[in-house]
Length: 199
Length: 199
DNA sequence: CGCCGAGTTGAACTGAATCAAGAAACGTGG
DNA sequence: CCACGTTTCTTGATTCAGTTCAACTCGGCG
Image (cartoon, rainbow over all chains, first blue to last red; front, side, top):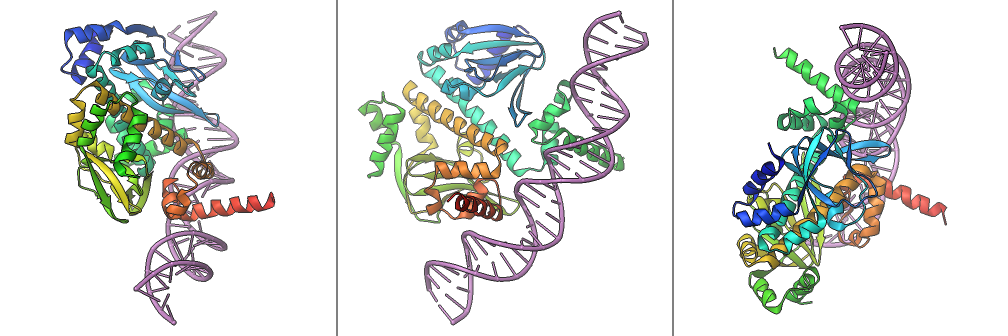
């Protein structure tokens, strides 16, 4: 699908009352960008200056802690990615956004976003809904990490994103689940053994 | 200080371009509420229907996990508290908001908030800034819990909120830091011993 | 005075991390 | 299409930070 149309579909859902004129204005501050697998979209030390709609491909958000990389989020097609804290605060990030596949992004920079906001309530509302949505998903992830066991977290992730196992290496999923690759491997072994018994 | 004036000061800071007329409208959807120490402002099973400015006192946000209570947040005077996920999604919460001291809240219900939003861009922006702020603080807390050691988390908390140790029992701080009361006690012991050596 | 919740301390336990070694899968160039 | 090097994944042995469990102290308060 054309990346701009994918974006339009996304926004019509988020904001059903958007007129053609609004959309036109919205579109005027967007830029399409193609990135290769392995390319870093954002790197430590930079201020994240864009929010990027992933029209095609897959992006991950990760950082280093004590020499090990920790994956904080996966963003497949039809979702937004950004180091939003850095974007909002205009302070340098410590984190990476990396294309895990050749991807097509539709990007809006900080200035463009401000010009949307100054255009009126519709776009302010859009920004509010985005921030609220981010807050809700972060809360959910938080509570999962804090209260569930590694095995439960694995099962939850597997239910929600089975396709991810075809698209990203297990060690990235492990760090996303807050465990080491070794532990993930053992969880998976236990589960397949259980499955065998039941058959 | 008068609770309404405290709230006004808060909003003038958040939103310098607010006119007297805007403020008047804003105030018209607020209700002052006094709660006693130990009172539950929100309980599991309820939909959280308010965002509450704590004009005086102290509120904590907590939940139960495997029979143990986990403190997720402290909200002292001059900050906003709510089970905002439940408030936004209109779904029942699993969590508690509890007054840890006799407190004065200035509350706004869901309907009131919607009427603010429908009034225009200024209030939409306010809602956006609130959600963005919540997102940023949750991100920060998240990354602290994921990447720092218990001792570092303790030190960080102690630097940021030394007064809290006078206002809440240690076992609540322990669960806020993601550790047991026993572990907190040992950390504190280690630190005071270190302090002795240096003197 | 005696109770009770909060905090401390010690001993034993445990789940996951770490360390180390291989095996399997992957992709890149010949 | 195969060979080789690299990356990813698995498995086992060991370690360790923090939990659990249990006993005890302390301080406030009826």
